[in-house]
Image 1 (tube, one colour):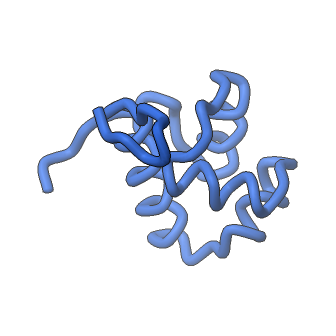
Image 2 (tube, one colour):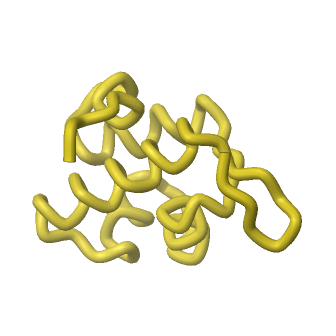
Length: 80
């Protein structure tokens, strides 16, 4: 668990954040582009990618669909 400003950030949240950014950049999408595809706000995407948000399952699904992925792809830990 990572501590940021007295808030605990789980390992799973950081894996999701890292994968979201990775797949977004692979698809050459800006945060704004992804936000539009997922019908979310651009600043929300940035805060999710920084691990600041405890994202809902519904929004995980919206982001996965916008990227052409499954939620599982965004929470799977890949070797670095």
